[in-house]
Amino acid sequence: MRSVLMLAALLASPVALAANCTIELAGNDQMKFDKTSVTVSASCPEIEIRLTHTGSLAKNVMGHNVVISPTDVWEAAAQEGLKAGLDNDYVTPGDERVIAHTAVIGGGETTSVKFPGNRLTAGTAYTFYCSFPGHWSLMKGDLVVE
Image (tube, rainbow, N blue to C red; front, side):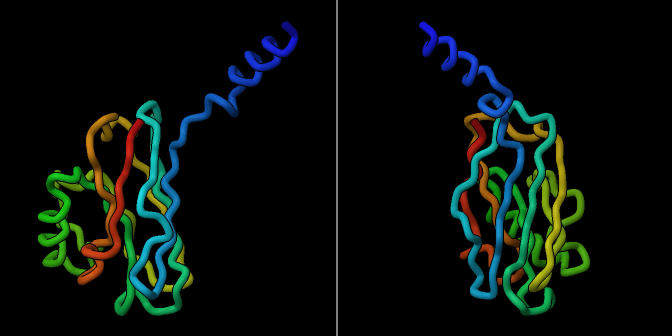
């Protein structure tokens, strides 16, 4: 009986119930993210994207960002974002297909952005990607919302 009570207390602890509300990614000079899939909780009031560029090249040469879009429209959003240029982080201003995005950063830099968790829905397919020219076809992954 004591074991059952201890297990119940552990499962009810804030650590056990903590929602995953942070997406942490690293990009390098080889045009790769360190993860191909990330998971967040649908119960998050706010979600944070944290990006670290582990390479050494400047952002105008090998810049990286993280953009989140629904999977059925991410490629079109990425292609259109190219026209927006570096000053707009290769994201078309006001593009409703873009849920959130970080700034483009260069080697050795970090960036983060927060957005309302209710912009994501559990069970919907999302893709995260780097919208820097030529990167989005390689630097992408699945965002799972549970």
